[in-house]
Length: 235
Image (tube, rainbow, N blue to C red; front, side, top):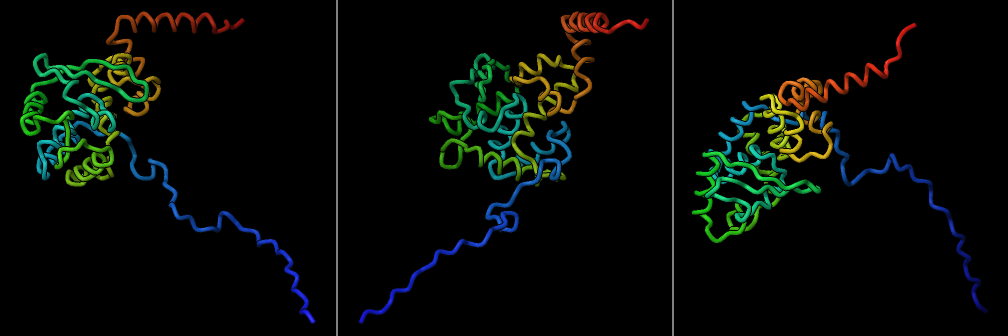
């Protein structure tokens, strides 16, 4: 006599509340929760460079921060900088941008030139300008740790990240009265509004553009005339 087989009845799993499930990856708060701005002032940049000079590889680290600040490099651009882009005889650097940016040529100042020649003597056979202890190209994560460590040594009240150097360049040039269109071309920003917001001069674009550039003054008058024509007259 055979035993009767048990019939398994499928049961539906209990409903799961997604909001109550513990997440393995913590959610990150907006940038405003960590810092009040996304750029560094010239005084903070001086403190950052001074702190980098006192680190283990002071010359390489300070030169990397200075070069990224002067030329508005992103982390990927400064890490991929090669000696074939630098002309020491003509004191120029051929800037190659990421994110479909337009390449350009920037002048090299005297302190940058002396620092680059010293780096060339220390690693004469490297294709990359900035290399690690093992003569390998610098990584973007390593550059981010470098900026964060230098910010702590400089006593900054917030956590510094590499893109702050690019915003600091725009902030410095904007306060010096540089034409906003020229600033956009120098930093190779596709959207002008992003240059105004990230560099901290949302309301001074028209004043700078009108004061520095004659073409800007002409364009301002054209816009003003068009605005007057579009405004309906009161009866």
